[in-house]
Amino acid sequence: MNATLARGLAGGLLLLALWEAVVRLAQVPPWILPPPSGIVATTWSARGALLDAGAMTLFEATAGYAIGAALGLLLAMLLALTTPVRKLVLPMIVLINSVPVAAYAPLALLWFGTGALSKVVMVAFIVGFTVFLNALDGLLRVDPAAVSLFRSFGAGPLGLLWRLRLPSALPAILVGLRVSTVRSMIVAIVTEMLGSQKGLGWTIFEAVLQIDFLRVWAAILAASLISLSFFATVSAIERRLVFWR
Amino acid sequence: MLTVGAAAGPRAKLQLNGVSRHFGAVQALAKVDLGIAEGEFVTLIGPSGCGKSTLFNIVAGLLEADKGGEVLLDGAAASLLGKVAFMPQRDLLLPWRNVLDNAILAAEIEGQPKRAARETARSMAADFGLKGFEGHYPQQLSGGMRQRVALMRTFMFDRDVMLLDEPFGALDALTRAMMQRWLLDIWSRYRRTILFITHDIDEAIFLGDRVVVMSARPGSIKLERRIELPRPRDPALLTTPEFNAIKRELLDAVEEESLKTFAAGAV
Image 1 (cartoon, chains in turn orange, green):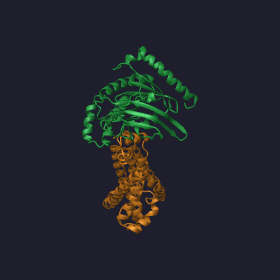
Image 2 (cartoon, rainbow over the protein chains, first blue to last red):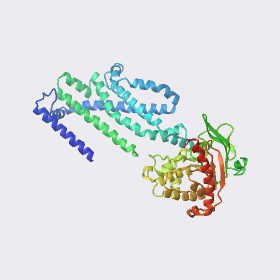
Image 3 (tube, rainbow over the protein chains, first blue to last red):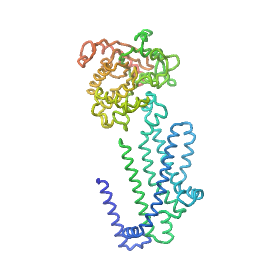
C-alpha cells in the first residue's frame, strides 16, 4: 500500500468518525442524516436485495459502456480518415452532445421500454460521445514531423492510423474510458429512477417513496462501491497500457 | 553553374537541376543544381533560414518543387516519396516501441514480416552500439543512443540514398564527436549515398567527401569544395593545417551569407 492511499484511507475514516459523532451528539433525525453505523448495518441486512439491484445496474452500465466505447472509437477512427466528412459532421455531433443527458432519458424509455435496454442505450449514448471526442482529439493531435517520417517510409492513411495515430491517441482514449466509468453508473441510475422495475436507481426511488432513508443511503453506498471498483479496474488497465507516460 | 550541376559526373545517383520553391511571395530556393555520385558523402551547410529544410523535404518527396526544376534519382524523374531514407532532426522514436521495434518501423511499413525484420535488427544492434539495449524503451536511453536507434531505423529502410538532417545537432560536443567517427565507420561498411545537413563547419569537413555551402535566402548553391583529406579520418585531423585551410575558406563563404541574412533582418 502506498503513502497516498494510506493517507486517503486515514482521512476517510476520520471523516466517518466525525460524521458519526456529530449525528449522535446533535441528535440529528435519521431521515435527515443517519449515522454511518446505521447505514452499514442496513446495507448488511439488506445485502441480498442490494446485490440483486447492484448486479442489474452494473450490467446495464457495463453493457452500455462496452457498446458505447466500441462505437465511439470506431466513429473516431472513421472520421480521422475522412477529413471532408469530419468537417461536415463534427459540429452536429458536438451540438447533440451539448444537450444534458437526462433530457433524452424519457425518449429512451418511450422507445426502448422500462427494461434494461433503455438504460443500456442511454449509457452507450453518453459513453460513446465521451470516448468519441477524446479519441478523435488524440487521433488528430499527432506530431506533423512524425507523419512526414511515416510518409517518407511509404505509409498510407491506414498504416498511419494503425502504427502512429492509434498508439499516439491511446492516452487520450484511456482518459475518456476512465471518465466514462463513473458516467455510465450515473446515467444507468438516473434512467432507472425515471422508469424501471429493478436496479439501484429504482431501489433509491422506491425507498424515498416509502420514506425509508436508511435504505436510500444503503443503495447509495452500494452504488458508490460498484462505481469505485469499475473506475479502479479501468485505471489499472490504463496504467498497464499507457506504460510510457 | 552547369559545371556545378555536373560535378558528380553524368552518372549521378541523385541529381537536382534548377530546383526552386516558393511559399506565397517568399522564395525559399532559387535554382539549386546539385549532383551526388553513388556512395558519396556530401555535407551541406548554410545560414539559418537558407532553405535547407525545404531542399531536404523536396529530395525526400514530401514537398513538390516549383515547375521547371527536376529531381532525378538514377537519372529518372519520379516521386521520391518512399525512395530515399530520410532522417529528420528530432529522433521521433515511438515511446510505445522498444529499440528493436523502433528500428524495424520502416521495414514493417514496407510489409516485411516482423520476425524477420527483428532478426535483421538484432544482428545490426552491435554495429549501432545498441547490443544489450534491444528491449529498452526510448525514454530509458541517452540522447546519443536514441540518435543511433533513429539512424539504425534509417539504415534499415534499405535505400541507396540517405538524407540526414542535422542528426547530431542536439547532442553535446563530446557525444557528437564520437557519433561522427562512428557514422563514418558505419558508412564505410554499409556504403550508402549520403546527403547530410549541418550547422557545424568542422562536422561538415570531417565527414564529407564534398562540402556544399548554401547562400542566404533564396537558397542556392554558393560554393562546393571537394575534401581530399584521407580516410579513415581520425580526430587529430581537426588540428592539421590542411583542415584549417579548408575551414578558413568555408568559414568566409558561410560568414558572408550569414551577414546577408542578418542584414535582411531574418535572424
